[in-house]
Length: 503
Image 1: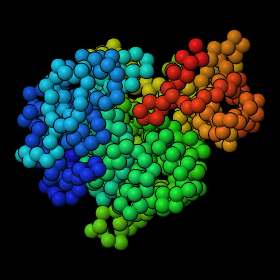
Image 2: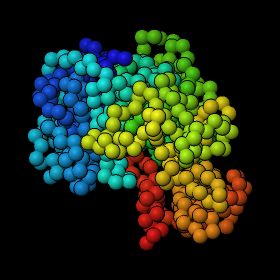
Image 3: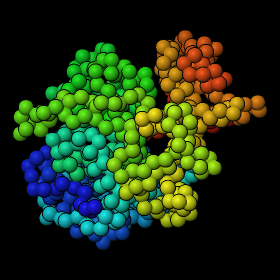
């Protein structure tokens, strides 16, 4: 496998657009090339990962220099920042000229990124096992761990997605995802640059910007997280321009958390387009997705994006993350490590995987690296799922937070959350398990009412879930909130819900 990740050929084709900053492939190569000599003395370099062209140029420069980049969340707290800087020991920090950096970075040499610089072209390193990125996990179960991603893993994952989605240099990707995370950075920046296509970053997500870029702007693909698609679903009944824009898109992709079935259905009903879900982790990059059909034949091959719209695909279904991607081996295992062969859509097991898309290990943590793998070399994801008869994978939640053992049953929180969201009185919902002397764990529903002045009663809500699923999956308690606690990627922070329950 080639270690070359980027298609930085001398070209006047658009590569990146961040607001007023637009860079062609030649301009990107020159701006990144200007930084390369300043980066090569370092073992690692931090990148202050704002949603700007400077971040993209800085990461590209690090890839060209062969220096692992450590993306930093601009909203990171003091303690977490100190841990990441101390653990990764970067030799410098890359930032935009106008960025105000926190005190925790004061001890590092600062390198300002000039997106209009004109340096020499630089060749990428040849070693596929060389570290490309060190991305820190969210730290929900302890201090964040630095996930070392080799060039091999990034190339394998992006190429597998290109096969599943027919992703080419003709595609124009639109998204507003943060660039400190693999979703926004690896898929959202390196993905189009590997294909020779174009990225249009929204700066920050808004429904209006999505409509503008997908509608008349020529965008063919949209990447987002469930919170973004929820806002799109809410806006569709009142926004005909947004409906037209989504109909024009070739591919709508949701990731980083499960997209509720209710939002799937609302988007499909309004636009005829099915949102494709994919599944991956920082340590594994992309593991599964639904394959989509190729775009319709282009009336004008010289015009990028003129191939759309094609069908969203032959088989996307709400709640499914599809089949393992090319090169990915996936199995479900019981708690005792035995492999589950059932494909009945009901038997729950932990996902374990192996393949070229996996990380090298956790930086400075050989103990954590060893613990993450089973004795036979499969990576333990900690995610729970079932397999459908056709092999499709359906996630039911995290082993640590979403698998509830109640009355002798293994119950995934995700299916109960979808059932709750199907109730007209529920705007948002999350489900946790709490210790129970009789059941082992009881199911607790956390609900944001559609009408705060008239929340749905607990009894009818529990009956609603029992009717849709099974009696043993009914919530035993319902607690009401103004909003669910979420992180930067829109994932519900269930640890915060449990802490609230303990107060």
